[in-house]
Image (cartoon, rainbow, N blue to C red; front, side, top):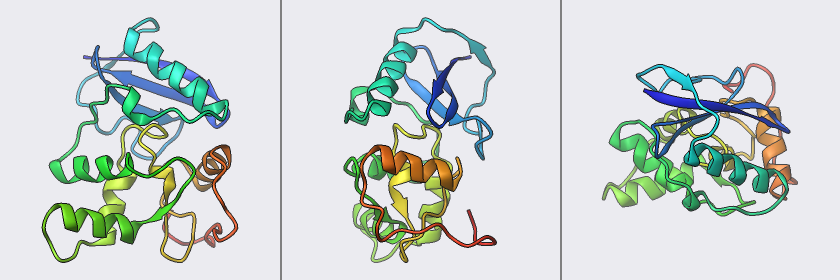
Length: 179
C-alpha cells in the first residue's frame, strides 16, 4: 500500500506518494505515466512525516531556495537501468541543464560501456516517478530544445525559470516533435 497527498504548486496540483518511510512518487496532474511505477493502490494520508518533509522541500523549492534532492528519503520503483539514470539526474546542479546525450555518456561510463543510446536514456528520464525532486526537467535536447518532459513543456520551462537557469540558448520545439 502507498500513501498519498496533494500539494498545490505554481505549476498545478502535485500528487505525492510514499511507502510510509520513503517518497515513491511525485506527479503533476495529467502527467504522462502518472502513477505508472506504483503497483498498489494509493490511500490518502495527509500527516506522514515523509510526505510532510516533501511538502516542506517543495515550499522551499518554489520559494526560490535550493533544496537538495538528497535531503529526502527516495525510493522510486524501476529497473536497474532506470535507477542509474535517475541517480544521474540527481547529480545535475540546480539551475543547470544537460543534454540527453551527456546523460547517455555518463551512464555508459558508469556501466563501463563505450556508448549508450540517448533514446534509451530519454525513455528512462520520461518515466521518472519523482518529478521536480529528481530533476528530469533539467535535461534538454542536443539542439537546445525543451523537449521530453512528461509534465509538459510549459511546466519544464517554468521550473527552469524558478531555478534561474539560463534559457537564452533554449527553445520550445515545434508542434509535431516528440514531447
